[in-house]
Image (cartoon, rainbow, N blue to C red; front, side):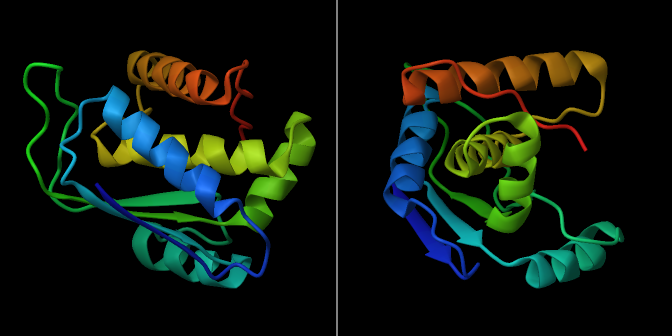
Length: 157
């Protein structure tokens, strides 16, 4: 599995933990070991530009996902096909503010956002209540399993 983590945010992020989490989540969801993914951490100005360009919304957001080959989770007997998962862009500055409101660490928030972004790349969404319940339960299970403790709940803005 090829995972590239690039930090252009100006803040320190635990890139090794991000790599380890990504590998754990993709293995748990039976994504082909040849899948490729990029994770980029950017500052608020860069995220605000992306948010405006792609979503036509103002201000920086916490995470954005850009799927490529529309891969979906596989099973133990039938992993997903090999391909390009896509890109995840995270803003650690927004993550830090959300973490403070949620009462947990900025690192936990970044890992939560990474898990959230990975699930979006794999076709999960939270527009409908049923989808949200499924996605957030899976997100919580995956992150809690990785952390070895209860994961923080997402901070809603």
